Length: 179
Image 1 (cartoon, rainbow, N blue to C red):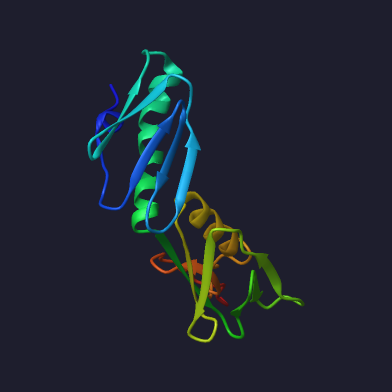
Image 2 (cartoon, rainbow, N blue to C red):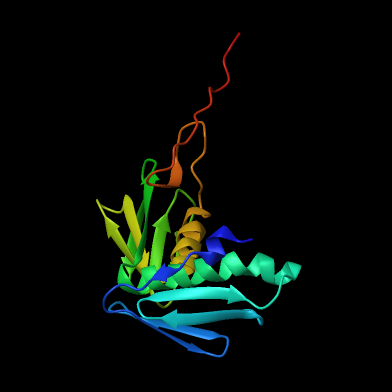
């Protein structure tokens, strides 16, 4: 029994959900997202709610039932509100610059790390290159882009230098001491 899969999804104003076989398309004021679902998962739009059901009790369909509902919910949220992840860069001389579709990160290496920003994602640089905001309508793409940017120099526990999420707390370690 999937508790998450059985919950109906409320469709907000200005959002339309269409189902064509196993393909679900969600359109809203911020854009359009579509996704193919697993065979055996059925989606029904009834008024201003979306219901997700499974054909049988097989292990695969039971595991995909709640997942499919969550993916559709994320698409509805994305086209109506959008998603945003904030990153902060700490360290002397560490900064970022946005050059069109390329994000240039100066992180203390001999050369600047460059990240090509994927379509559907916008990266804004604030506070002289110390704060980054990754925004978009796809929760997957926003999370992946933010994780990829952070992976160039994750915050280290001794001095706290590096890239971290705005709400992330870095547990600090004590350095070596002389006896």
